[in-house]
Length: 108
Image 1 (cartoon, rainbow, N blue to C red):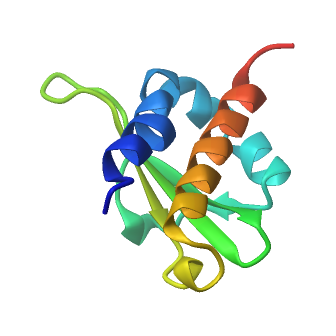
Image 2 (image 1 turned 60 degrees about the vertical axis):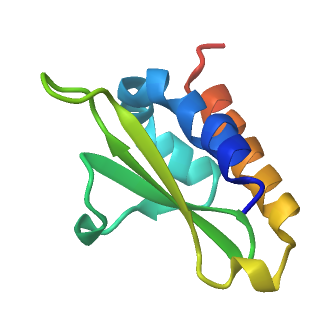
């Protein structure tokens, strides 16, 4: 997929430095983006599912930094997302959703 690298940097890696803050603001993020906590079976230290568009869900899975590994973020799309938007538009949805998450955690 030609958008994989761009998606990783623009939708996932931009959230890595903010992982701790995002955890603290998770309820507010879910409230503003029509979401909820991710099921424990998704793994990670914490995560949530948001619906930036009515029929498309994004699941963000966060791993906090520890002694062995740096923090990381994975963003997964609902399996039906490609039925509603082309890949380039889906990459944009991921990027804009991540930017919105950053906006939510920034103090005003």
